[in-house]
Each structure stands twice: as structure tokens, then as C-alpha cells.
Image 1 (cartoon, rainbow, N blue to C red):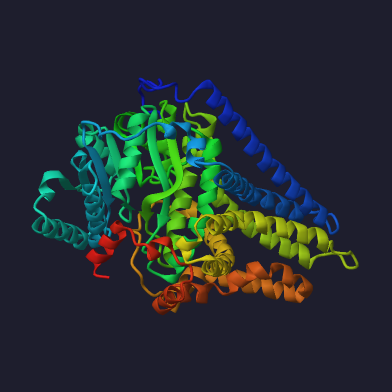
Image 2 (cartoon, rainbow, N blue to C red):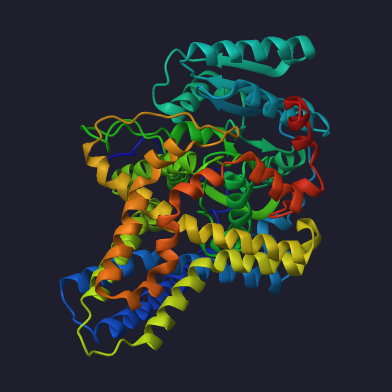
Length: 596
């Protein structure tokens, strides 16, 4: 089977059975509860849609609309219940993280283990200056802790572009001149090829240096972690020998554009309650994002090698969306994968424009659809298979939304003459979908208002930011859904995957690039508008929220990339982030190194 890597699948030595029987029963009950609530929500909303359509004409188009709606509603309903449970946990009990995971109550102040911890960053034709500045900031932050001697640093490059290689070597040379101690615990290595992508890069590290270290702190090129956060996670892992992977909530910082600023504001608020709710029922097998995590190296090296998928075409070859598979293999081997639902010094970058956001989303879409080939692997538990499938389902929900929109437009245009449209039922369904879709961000904003409004500039600025982000999400949602749909249509015609380096610095999209990227959205938006205007003008109001984003896709892409628009948002305090009010030292060091 794909994914079988050999070796024993026994529980880790000295482990407390990866959780007591009571805790396993508790996780099962919680998972059944969430599954039941999600299914009831899907079926209930589906019944409302059928109640609307039964007043019209039930045909193949209606059946397609219902099926697509149910697929889309799966992700929406699960997100709602995650967020609601997380909100109740964050406000209903003391120390919610310890309530979700009792092992956190154990005393954790102790020296780091005898083996040094490896802090690892991977590079592939990325901006070397920004990457090295972030590693330097992490190293400096760890030097301020009492555990500094317990860390070694590895910068693992498989860059292929001459300019990128030269820049990396120059940054390393200048760092050595600036700080001669670099040679004591910093290793720079460049592979001749990027065989196996990032997982292959990490695999080579494990084979070469893995035996020297018990734990690895894995960073992406845009990652920053505070020394305090890293030491805390390492100590938690030391206290829990059954723990294989641990990370905390990752938030975006140093947002270089209005697009990134708005996205990060909504993402941060949306993730806070959702992650707490998910951690409550996922138990010992939480989601893993592939970076900003502490990993137990021995089982990772032994059990988590990525399989090579045989065959030809876009779903064969090397795996590049590796995180959920690594977590599944680690869990299959008897180790826990945990997330602390806390904002605690773990940061990442955000795509600066709609173009970069769509390109990253498309890569994730293909990668996670490809990962479905690993689902039948032997030994995986139901929760492991769930994670692999639900992440892929997130992307499938995008074309489902588009199909629902187009089907609904056709049904509206062909609504039988003289047949009353049940506006009250349709409005109820509309409201339910919108509330559930936006609920993670709504709960997150309420949480911030109750718990720490000053971190976001006070309640008025919190609400102003929430309103701005709502308009942004209202426009972005249909744009992103169509972009994913167009990409998925083209996947069967793609023979080879090509890794495009993420662009992370701010720049302005020109109108030509925006047109080339989002012309399908514009064409679809105007097409549906003209179609409804010619067949049923009264129905346009129902489609307006979706059509607005599609019709404005090109100016949206350009305006959200304009630097003056970003500066204006900063000046007015729109979507103000906590790190702008109280700048963490690690962020300040990166800004200082960049000369900003």
C-alpha cells in the first residue's frame, strides 16, 4: 500500500498508552458529537433548499444544485461547530488548553535534553536575505533564554537558480563576519537537486544529521518563532514521550500589502476559536501544518518517509503537500500529534496579492487531492483518513459553490410563471449559510472584544477592522472559488507539477496581470448578470453578493496590491494587529535587519 514504510507500529516506549482508556472514550464521544451535529446541519439546510425548489420545478438541474450545495455545506457546517465549541471553551472554563489536553498541567521547567535541538529551515529559490534574517532573529531570541546551548541551526537549501544560490552564500558570509560564533552551531547545506521537494530535503537532513538530535524545530522560509515559544514546546515534548509533533497557533505578521493585511486579520480571528474547538475533539491526532512545529526526530525519520506514487499524470510522483501524511504516519506509529490553541510567539508570512494567493491555493489544491491516494494505506486510523479527506474536501467545496451558483441561476431563470417564490424559506437558508460560513470570524472578533480588545486598538478599531475584512471576504470568496474551479478543470491536462517559488515581498499588480489571472471570474460574473437580467431580473438581488466579487475581481486584485492603500490602512488603524502595537523582539529584529 502507498505510505507503508516498514517498521513496528507499536506504541512508543515509556508511553502512557498514548492516553488513558477514559480519554480515548472521551475523544470518541466528542468526535461522534461533532459528526452528528455536522450531519444534522447539512441535512437540515439541504431540506430547506429542497423546500425552496419544490415550489419550482424539480429536475436534473435542481438535483445538481442540491448535491453541490450539500458538498459545500459539509465544510461550512464543520467550520461552524468547530468555532462554536472553541468559543464556548475559551469563555466557559479556566485554562482551556489544559482542559483540552490535561498533560499541559504537568510541571515543565527543566533543562533541555542532552542532545541539542535542531532548528531547521528549508529554502528553494527563495529570498535569501529575508530567510536568513528570520533565522538570525530566532537564534538571537533563543540566545536570550537559559537553554541557548541546546540548539543547533540548519539552513537546508536546494535552490537551483544561480542568483538565489549566490545570494544565500553572500548572506552566510556576511553573517559570519558579523558574528564569528555562527560557525559553532549554524550549518548551511545546499543539495544539487530538489528531489522529493521539501520532504526530500528534510529526509536528507534526517539521514545525515538526524541521529545527533532528539527534536527538530521545523521552520518555513517565512517563519519566525520566539525563543520562549520554542523552549516551551520542547519542554512539553520532553514531558510527554508519546508526543510526536506539537505546534501552537500560527499567525501572520509583517503583512506587506492591503491584501495580506486584510487576509491575516480575518484568518487570525477565524482560526482562534476554530482551532480550540478542533483540538477539543481531535484529541491525540490534531491537524499539522508542516512548519513552526517541534518534531520527535527518531520516529519521524523511521516512519514518516513520503511514498513515491507510481503512475503518470498530475497525481503521481513525489508528494509535496506532506504535512497531513507525516502526521498520519506519526500517529499510525503510536505517537500523538497535538496543537496548542494559543497565540504564543509563532509567526508566518502571508501572500501579498490575489495572484500569489491563488497560485498558492492551487498548489495546495493539487497536493491535497493527490494525497487522497494515501488514504487506503494500511494501518491508518479513521481520524487519520478523515484528515486526509477533509482537507481535500475543503478544495472540492469551491467548485461545489460555483456549481450551486450556476445551477441556482438557471433555476431562477426558468422559474414557472405564476408560481410563488418562497422568499421566506430562501432567506432563512441564505441567512443560515452566511452565518455559519462567517461564524469562525464572528466568534473570533467577539472573543477579542471580551478578552483583549486593547491588543487590537480597542473595540471601535476591532469592529472597523471586522467590517473591512467582511467586505474583503465577501469579494474574495467567489473569486477564490472560481479560481480553484478553473484550476481543477485543468488538472487532468497537467502532466508535470512545477514548483513556483512563493513571492513574499510587496509589489503592485498591473492591470494586465490581474486580467490574465481573474478574467474567468469577470466573464462568469457578467454572464450570470446578463442572463438573469434577460430572464428574471427580480432574482438578481439574491445573487448580488456573489456577483459583486466576480464582477469586481480585476479592480479588487489591483487595488488590494497598491502600496498607498496599505499605508492608508496602517495610518487609519484598519485591521490593526497586536504585533503592531507591541512589537515582539523577534519581529523588531527582522524589521531592523531589513532596514525598515
